[in-house]
Image 1 (cartoon, rainbow, N blue to C red):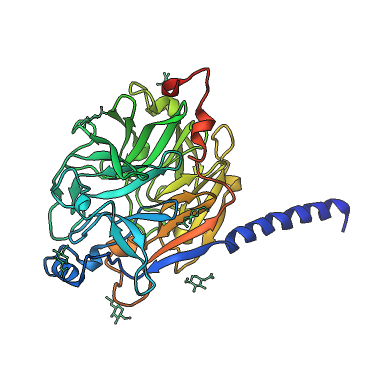
Image 2 (tube, helix red, strand yellow):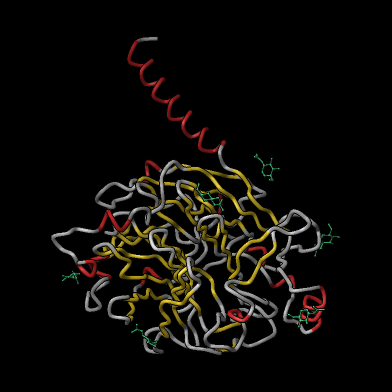
Length: 408
Ligand SMILES: *[C@@H]1O[C@H](CO)[C@@H](O)[C@H](O)[C@H]1NC(C)=O
Ligand SMILES: *[C@@H]1O[C@H](CO)[C@@H](O)[C@H](O)[C@H]1NC(C)=O
Ligand SMILES: *[C@@H]1O[C@H](CO)[C@@H](O)[C@H](O)[C@H]1NC(C)=O
Ligand SMILES: *[C@@H]1O[C@H](CO)[C@@H](O)[C@H](O)[C@H]1NC(C)=O
Ligand SMILES: *[C@@H]1O[C@H](CO)[C@@H](O)[C@H](O)[C@H]1NC(C)=O
Ligand SMILES: *[C@@H]1O[C@H](CO)[C@@H](O)[C@H](O)[C@H]1NC(C)=O
């Protein structure tokens, strides 16, 4: 063997070595066959079952975010019988965690427009402890029996997790977010001059991207062909098509990445476009390349983008160079497993730990989910990826004293 080949080989082995380390650290933190709640007492639970306020097979965990020692999860009100849509995990008697309505049962009450009606996603800013929560204001939007109920205006609530006080309640006007057809799905934050100024929100029904401006307390939207649902590709017969879903913000706050549910194409748009409601969106979108599979949620760490690869039952990763032009030759698989990584839904960071939910959502909507087999249907994973999330130290990283913004 000549010297050159040897060097290449060592290089190769060290790459493999680092991947193996990464995969070895992946662990299932929780697994559940069904969702159960932290009821006040047994009769509370029995009454909820008798009145159809709790229909176990209509409850599926989708959203996840971690803050301190708490794991927050959402249960979409797609169908009837979801007693609480925003929850925090607490230990249960059987070793399976229970969902404790967050911040309370009252704040999850159907029909109370100050309370949460249907939360698919939230974001937690680790710098401030603020949880940014999007609420459709609508329930039963995919129920086989009931029509959708448009109970309240769609809203954004910002809750300070350190005090449990609401610091902002914003109702979206109907012209921006339809009160009768929206499906606000995912949310990311954009930092400007040391504070989270903009929230970007995907709509997986109306195929729109919303912008909420914290400083001006107003909102607007963008629409584009690339946000519309794409027909299923060969090999995707097992999946469900839908419009723009997963979105991710780059750690330098220059790019928003997005994709529709089964489209392999990954798109990017500059935040300089999104921050101005008068921008022309259409000519300022870039197609970066094709992912290995369809994907739901996405998230950026300091230098990488993580997303599902449905067809591979995997989480995939690509490196993001400074110019945002994702190089798909760097794409690789972080975790994969044909039984416990089916439909990776949402991601969250805690330090350098990447947390995610795999929930077999396609089985749920194809009525193939078995809630009585005892087999786990929802998995909560954690993997150390050696990089912190996009919001880590965002205050210091975006604050320039010569352009003080609101901090000045
Ligand atoms: C059980 O919980 C329900 C709902 O909170 C409450 O109304 C009821 O008084 C409780 N019953 C007992 C026996 O504590
Ligand atoms: C998040 O990370 C912190 C610091 O390492 C740790 O104390 C905390 O328990 C973690 N949260 C969870 C839910 O594991
Ligand atoms: C923001 O706008 C909402 C409209 O939904 C209004 O109710 C609220 O008072 C405003 N908040 C601030 C801080 O201006
Ligand atoms: C977006 O694209 C259009 C057309 O190419 C261009 O004129 C415009 O300056 C770009 N930027 C913004 C902010 O609209
Ligand atoms: C896949 O996950 C299942 C369930 O956690 C586990 O039993 C199995 O060993 C895993 N398979 C591989 C190849 O890691
Ligand atoms: C669910 O699993 C149980 C136990 O394995 C089995 O008896 C039942 O037939 C299954 N139900 C469906 C709808 O597949």
